[in-house]
Length: 359
Image (cartoon, rainbow, N blue to C red):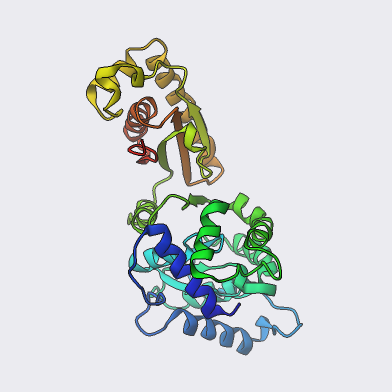
């Protein structure tokens, strides 16, 4: 499967996930003068010309960053976008491009340090770089671990965004374009998906931000990216509080999950059934139940403890999933109150009601 085929699959998969028929051109780099492919070629030429860069025809490839004489403040911020094929990597990259990031698609992992070095020597013109890394990198993908280790040794600020999606959603997207998964070989699409999950398992575990796009459209994915990257100043911690219904499945991108089914269900109160947890009467009913306010107070206290640990470990994002049976009443009301507590304590917080309105 060539690069153009993969780009077509990504683009059509994003359109299916967003339930939209618009056709977009391949993403351009944030620089006005160079496309992502040109930036990748320039990075490769620089790697070939520099004595320390080595070659890629079987010889060793240096992934060190030579920043002698370059102020530390000039080293650009780096975001690595990866994840499952068909999960929306291109949409995430385009969103960062719109926010002013210099975006390079399908850059071989061994060249990431070289790209950062070039950005550091741009005299501040390239302050933020986003690199899309995926299985199209083939043999280069094995170099990612070494590149990440060298970036950490050089104190480069980097984050990993991982795009996730369910097997059902991915199969549906690949079947809609009638193209094979890049790793399926002579097998089925599900075989390629399973192979890719195994290949990316360790990277997913190291990700700073995991976004499940199974039920997201293009605009919702963009909103999630904007919420995390649009601010001029990076907050210490960003939180997403997500209400959901257990009968629709657990959110795969949740860091913490709590269950509100210990509270009476407003669904069985006829005058409240038609409303959601955003309604004042429903919220009052939920929080007048024994244990509701106590749970909110104690869980907020627990989150303060967790937040402190996340900050010490350098974790910037946390997704808190609050569930009830259908994701309509109890979980919605509790999510709103919990998010308000986090905001009052200085945590930048986004509220998402995943399943509200599905009934």
